[in-house]
Length: 94
Image (cartoon, rainbow, N blue to C red; front, side, top):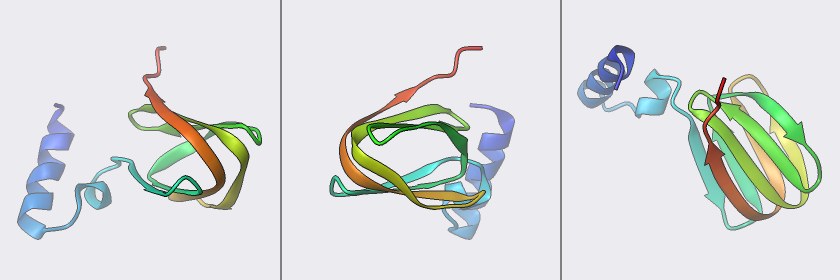
């Protein structure tokens, strides 16, 4: 664990703020198989109706499904809708 993450965890514990607010840790909320909300993203790498790949500080989030669309996006969050069949995390190898 790097030094910045340790500091963020200490601040989170003392202030009771969630770690994702203090650091750039991604937060992902999945509601059923029809909605996904992602905080602290780094952009969208791939977007098709069947596949979306979202860049995170920890790697890539790959989502597969049907009728995938971005309902809302800004620099802090992405709200996806569609019918989601699977998602996985991939490390970025550079």
